[in-house]
Amino acid sequence: MNPLRSIFLGISRIPLPVMLLAIVVLAVGVTTLIVSYLHEQETKTAQAIRKAQQAEQGELIRVVKAVKDIPEGSAITFEALEEKEIRGHYAQGTLNNASLAVGRTAKYLIPAGNVVSFGDLAPVDQLPGIEARLKEGYRAVTFPVDSSSGVAGFVAPGSRVDILASAGSGHETNTGCILSDVEVIAVGDTTQRAASGTTYQGSTITVAVSTADTTKLIKAQIASGKLYMALRNQKDHMPIRVVDVTSLYKPVAEINVPSVPLIPPPQDNLVRNADAQTPTTKDYSVEIISGTRKEIMTVPAI
Image (cartoon, rainbow, N blue to C red; front, top):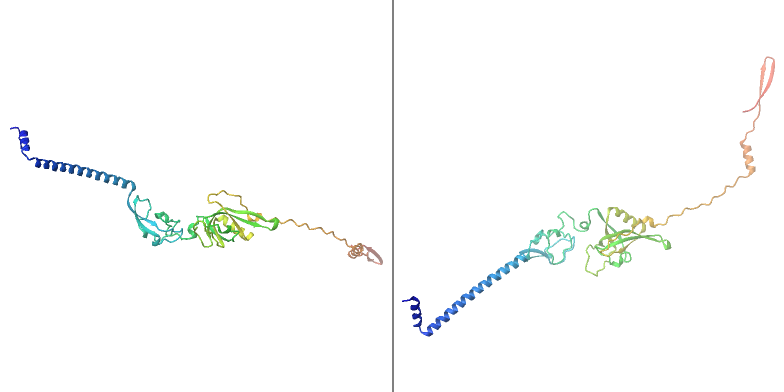
């Protein structure tokens, strides 16, 4: 007998309820297999997308961040740092352990939220403070100021100023620029710029100048007694004409001493003096005796 015919005859003898149940079970099984396959494919696709995104964003790395502003030249403490895991790629010099920065000196201002790197740290043998801010070949020079010469406290660390001096008084006063575009590194004992709008009321200003300008600035301070500052825009570095402080002083005019005529002495005095100075001369008489002869010869005085 044909096998297919036998199968169909066998199926036809199955009761209808049983057959319907078998069909339902088969349909449910097939549907489950299809849904499971689709879910597996969706999961694989999502994982592939997530891996691609993570690869694009970078791996999970540990970095050190500043939790508050760390001023330039100050010692770094544990309280100012935090370790955090972020997605990204390690940049050269990035710190992954806070202990590597604790106790070191901040080379620059490190704002809160910034990732700390070795480039933000001053060398171990470098002193903190003003010395760290001076460029090679520069010197720090301090001079006194008041509210008028100090631009009413608006000059701050990091400002750029022109330094002026005056000489003379009244209508003969001369004023000139001694140094141009000079960096202020401290106001009083404050070396860091504070929040915007802050005024600085220090009685002294410290600037960074070259070795050649150091003597020029001190000379101007001694000669004029008071130096003034003109505050510049941070982006304005246009040099202006500078002068030596001695050129501000008016040259001393030559004093014309009137000639006094000589009073001639009295003529009678001249005659008397001439007579007194001219000695009177007399002839000398010489007696010559020869045998019995005797002669007297007159010899004029020399």
